[in-house]
Amino acid sequence: MKRRDFLKSTAGIAIATASTGLLAPSEALAAAESIQSDPSGQKPEPPGGDGPLIISSPMLQNFAETSAGVAFAVSDLANGFVVIGRQPDLSDGRKVMCGGFRVTDVNDRVMLVRLTGLLPATRYYYRIGADRISYKGGYKMKVLGTEEDPCIYSFTTAGKGARAHFCVINDTHARMDTFARATDKIAALSPSCVVWNGDACNTEETVEDQMRIFLTPDIPHKDYAARIPYLFCPGNHDDRGWANRHLERVWMFRQPEERSSRDWDLGRNFAVRLGDIALIGLDTAEDKVDSNPKFAGLFNSAAYREAQTEWLRDALKRKDIARAPFLVAFCHIPLADDNPRHNPGDIFPADSDPAYSTDYALWQRTCAGLWGPLLDKARCQLLITAHQHCYRYLAPDGSRRWAEIIGGSPELGYRGKGDKRVEDSSRFPTLIEGLTENGELKILVHNLLNGEIQDTFNFKKR
Image (cartoon, rainbow, N blue to C red; front, side, top):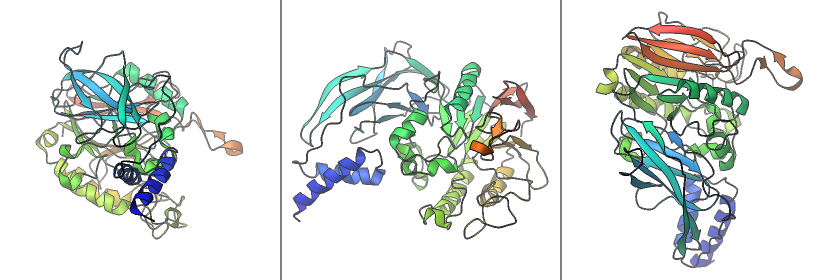
């Protein structure tokens, strides 16, 4: 086959596959390169054009002291942008395009706009917009029209001067009834940011499935993250499924210039100062070992955890983090557990051992060995985790100086499925709230099933 014919054939196959929402970034990039390398390549326009182009409220993602991300969904091939400024009417607004440098990220599902060069602990106002694009080849493209959201939103960046108030949700598992309760409570509390502590997903195979979870959820507060920034610590389910292997197409990484070159692939880790509180985010990755045959050797969690150890060592030395009176860390799978029947996640080659109650990790002994000593040395007061679907509190003991709170369940007062479903009052979703009060860190565990405060804890300065 001649090279030109091969490229045209490959482009057609790639475009057809892309229409299902299943392309990984490397495949999508290869498809785009094959089209643009051949001026005669024809990319059919996606359906649409008559209805609204912007089909979701914006979602603030992975904010920090001098940056923030804005994501939103579109219905047609588009080129997204954000107008941001410090004046409420955006009279000083500057336009930031999606996609970073070189070329913009034209696609027909999700717009990701990264805002950099911001000031710490500063209120910004913004509006989202998108150009509807006609693309019929590398030399045949044009803007058909521009649509802007009529709403002007605002948010405040992180930093030492920011309000020390955060919330944590976990294990929502695409359950809109549970997620609605969480977002209702968040709207009432109005924290400075929210940490979504993993397992937002189940096993998502398409980008559209991911969009329904993060950008177009079926909940009353559809603008749940338009004014309150979210940070994300992935859970094991957030890596499962063809689309979830590259969740960054819906939930962005920070741009390379925001991190050292060594850490470019650690897009979910965060070290953020929020008033007197330093927040540290880690990713425990899969709850099965890499050698488990269920995953055919397609996971690389062990090396990922080790890479995060070096990132964590450096993050804890940062002046703004080291000098914060309070240090709270987050990860999905617990790093401590006092139940000897709970699988510690390092049972080779396939997680199974009759000594343990499950054939998957209920806690992460490997991560505890890698990260625990660093958190101890930094005098971390609290680690907030999830994964076990049952709220628990573990006090500091002789092996660690930090307490651990394990967030609750997506179930609303029951456990099991189908005929095995039974009532269980210990199964309830939690919203964990943290704020500084009278020189202490106050943690409130909200029970989202009965609307009451389940527990309250106070931590002194480190």
